[in-house]
Each structure stands twice: as structure tokens, then as C-alpha cells.
Image: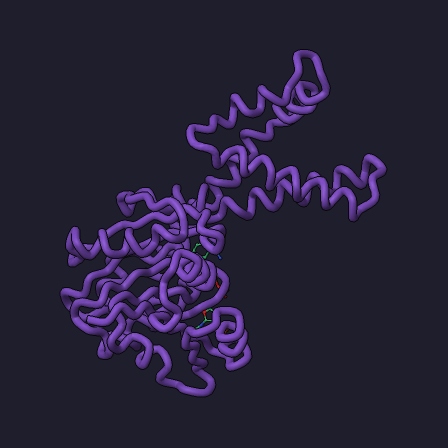
Length: 277
Ligand SMILES: NC(=O)C1=CN([C@@H]2O[C@H](COP(=O)(O)OP(=O)(O)OC[C@H]3O[C@@H](n4cnc5c(N)ncnc54)[C@H](OP(=O)(O)O)[C@@H]3O)[C@@H](O)[C@H]2O)C=CC1
Ligand SMILES: O=C(O)[C@@H]1CCC=N1
């Protein structure tokens, strides 16, 4: 079979994976992406020179064309469209093609029921730092996926960052931490920038400080063996300014608020699964 990888529904998430793979050395000639709009297909082709991008509004059989002959087919439309997309391509897939879904809340059982019997399927939960090769991505194999097929997909996704294998019943929780998590870090940066303005800083300067500080802290966390608690203590002089800030966060219940947000994200995944069921 070919080495071709198809990204069906190449929006924010699938483009980040695609960029991570190209950054890791995947040949763009082995990459095909589909979207609905011609404008978006042109944007992808321009940004990722050498890939093939096909818009549904120009070629209505774009997903079938891309699926045909591809070794790995990554489904990246919104959860509500995943089962229809799987049904649409099911007659075009090679029996050995590995179908990977990155959708939140769509179960392996829902995917397998929409695909030909025996089709290998993997449920995956990536995050957008995949674009820079700094993502975290989970894989959960379905009933027809062999250990070799799982390894093939892990090897491919390695270019997007850290790959973890989890049981499917862990995916909603994982999604609430790493899938949604980049947004929590960006939210922190937004709140810090706003706080700086409240303290009298120029908005542009405050945004620069917040961005560089969250990014710099991220680099420190990415060092091997980094311990967030120890790193925080390294900033907090006894009876100093940082200690006062952290004590205020603790008093106001920030850890419990973050836990409640993550719980809400996981509960929302389960709710979507029920709605799609
Ligand atoms: N965004 C994230 O951080 C994460 C997202 N996910 C999952 O990734 C999936 C996609 O999310 P996201 O990337 O944010 O969404 P986007 O809306 O950014 O991307 C969806 C893409 O799918 C395309 N599309 C829609 N319908 C079709 C179709 N029938 N055939 C081909 N292409 C189609 C759209 O095309 P067009 O642009 O032309 O409209 C768009 O480019 C979701 O299932 C989500 O749960 C998982 C982890 C993290
Ligand atoms: O917000 C969402 O539903 C998707 C899944 C995880 C991150 N983004």
C-alpha cells in the first residue's frame, strides 16, 4: 500500500497534525487534505507546499478520492459529522487502511458501526501544539486494529509530540486536560494581560509580558523531569510578592475552579456521545 495520509476535514486540529508531520519530515507528496470550501483548500495548499488539498464545493467526491489508496485516513470534522463522513468513505477504503478519528466524544463503537466490518480504527485525542511538534496525542485502538497497525500510527503521530496510549474510558478525562488544555493556558495569558492593564501597564506591553511569560514558563515545563510545583517554588521568595499572589489564588479557590472547568469539559464530551448515540 502507499504511504499516503489523508486528512478528511482539515480545519484547526487536522491542519496542526498535518503541519507537525511535515515538520517531522513527511513528504508533502504523500499528504492529501479535504475541506468544504475552495478558499480553505487554496489556503492549505499555499501554506503547505506540495500537499494536495481538495474542496468539496469543487469536487463533491473529494473525501472518497482522498480515502482511496490512502494507508492512514484521519477524520477531523466536527463530532456531529464524523459518522456521516465514515459512511461516505466506507466504500472507498482499502481494507487495510487505518482510520483514525480525532473527534471528541465519538466512540470506537460508533465509528466501527459506520465502517466496513474488520476496518482498523483508532480513536485519538490530539491538541493544537501538534503544529510545532509539541502536542500530546492519545491513541485508543478499536477491535480490529492490530498491534502493528497501532504502532504504525504511533510512529506517524510521534512527529506531533508525545504519544500516549489510553483505554477509551479515559479519553473524556484526557481531553479535558490535554485536548482542551492549550485553551486554558491561552486563557491564563489573556487574564494576565488584562490584569497588567488594570495595574496601569500599556495594553501592548502587558500582552507582550503575558505571552512571553506563559511561553517561557512552558519551555521550562518542557525540560525533562520538570516539576511544576518545584518550578513555582523557585519563583516564590519566602514572604515575597509571588507568595502573596499564590496565597490569594488559593484563598479564592482557583485550583477548585480549574477542576470544575475540567469536569465540565469531560461531562460535555459524555453528553455529546449520548446525543450522537
Ligand atoms: N481544535 C482543537 O483543539 C481540537 C479538536 N479536536 C477535534 O477535531 C475535530 C475538528 O475540530 P476543529 O479542527 O477545531 O474544527 P474546524 O471547524 O476548524 O475544522 C473542521 C474542518 O472540517 C471541514 N469539513 C467539514 N465538513 C466536511 C466534509 N463533509 N468533508 C470535508 N471536510 C469537511 C471544514 O471545512 P471548511 O473549512 O471548508 O468549512 C473544516 O476545515 C473535532 O471533531 C474536534 O472534536 C480534537 C482535539 C483538539
Ligand atoms: O472543544 C472541543 O470540543 C475540542 C475537543 C478538545 C479540544 N477542542
